[in-house]
Image (cartoon, rainbow, N blue to C red):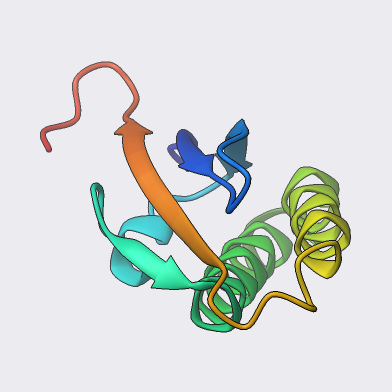
Length: 101
């Protein structure tokens, strides 16, 4: 199962490199797109849950790395809950070697 990393920018400008054990993240986020915080989190939640479920189907247990990434995103997003205009940018995908954009 090809994993990938993606870089985001939080509303305060801080960048974070994130992990997905599956390319499914590309089905839910677009490189260069900017999302309202709640929308970004809903998309990330869905994608990382699907990715973890795919690992569970293949290996018999959920992906702790995907669930850990989701937990880090949830905790970081909570810091912006009082900012209704907060947005998160998906800056870039880092695809595994040999995969096309």
